[in-house]
Each structure stands twice: as C-alpha cells, then as structure tokens.
Image (cartoon, one colour):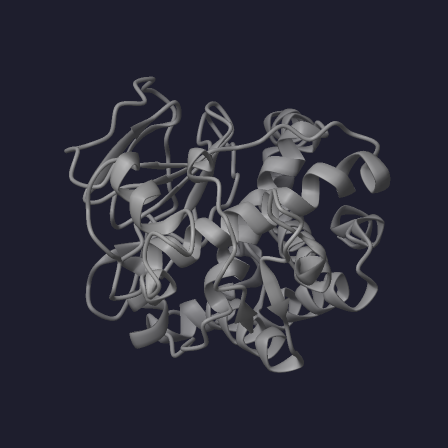
Length: 311
C-alpha cells in the first residue's frame, strides 16, 4: 500500500471528539452490543453488527487500535496537521491522518459507484474519532465497543487506539487492516441508504429465530463491499485530481483477510474458551469472512455481494 504524500484531504468528513469527555451527539436509547468475553477478561464487540433484535442497533467485536493515534484535539488541529502536504511532511506517520485519508478514499469511491452500480444516491457519512466514551443516537458507547456504525445517526464511530487490540491480541498486524475496518463500516452505511438495514430489522422482528442468520448475511455483505472498495481504491482522487492511494497490492488484501479471519465468530469463540456454536454466530465464520471479502475484491462489483441469497 502506498499513499500519495501530497494528497489534499477533506477534514470535514471526520469529527475529532477525542478528549471531549463523551462526545456530543445526544440521542440515547437503543445502543446494544453483544458482549463476548475475550482472553484478558475485557468485554469486546465484534466489528459492527447491525443486529437490531429487541431494539439493539448494533454490536460486534471490534478489536481494533493502533498506537500512534496522533495529537488529540478538535477538527482545527486535525485539519492543520493532516489536510495538505504543506501542513506536516510526516503527517501520514500519524494514525489519525492516515484514517482521514482512508475515509476520504472510501467515500470518494462510493459517491460515484453507488449511483452507477447500486442505483442509489450516496450521502456522506461522517466518521467520529472518540476516546473513552461517546454519545450516539443508538446510545452511549465506550472504548470496549470497537468501530461501529449507528443507523440512527448514519455515522461511524471509532476509538483509534483499538487498532492496537487488533494487532497485539489478534495478530492482524498489517496496515491495510485499518482501511478494511473503515470500509466495512461504510458497507453498513450503504445498507442503510439502500434500505437493507430497515428490511432486515423488520424481518428480525417478525422472525426472531432468523435474527442471527440475517445478521451474519449483513456482516458478510459489508465485508464484500469493503473488498469492492479495495479493488477500486487507487481510482479515487482528491480535489486536484491526484490519487489518494497510489498502490494497493495483493499483500494488502492479504492483510485485510488476516483481519477478517481474526474476528470470525468461530475463531473468537475458540480464543475465549467457548465451544464453537454456529447457531450463535452473528458475523460469520473466519472462512466466510475471508470468502466474502475476497469475492468483493476479485469481482470489484457490489452486485456480487448478495450474501442474503447465499444465506
């Protein structure tokens, strides 16, 4: 993976709430996760499931974090350090600046691709950097929740320090694991925009016995959409027409696959000392997550991401 060191970025796509003591999104009600014990005794949530059972809007196990999260502060600081190459020649040494570029690249692709391939108008979703805790329209979340998408806000929330968890606890050390995680979350945003999220919620309410199966399909579809983005990442440009990613390699895809496999339901159950129980899966097995991520990348076509038909 190579980033364009001279790229001009749009800081308005990220709200940096770190150090703000819980964010300011208001809302309340509805946030529910599916807590799963992990070896240290912490409670984690697998990467953003939009579970929607009994009012639960999302849950999942996001073991994600990455050391050098950069200076904390408001968007003025993020913009000053990260927006252009003249602001800081070493800006992409910082996790927050790199993640700002990833957000720009993901949304830049879907703005064009969503109308062309899915027949829907894309609406930007803000990504929120937070620390410790944050208030959302789905409820209050703390840092034990990994990156997640809240359908009520149509926004994404991530504590960047969780990239350390993904790397140190689950062995997904590759840098491309980070844009994969964000692209997965934006896959959930697309599901909201095209009505899939609402339809699944209704089906889960009508048929609770099918709730887990539908949840797995949503997660695998989001993995596939993340793969589609990765296949086209080098096509996205900044306002000056310069590419954001100058190279994405097969090794980068392998890093994303490593991350997807590390957070498969069966792998997490084994690591926590539980018996593998496919009926309890909410995100899919490691093999399934690998399969759907690779399908998206290989085909480059979001129309090939119908995990519900396969389910």
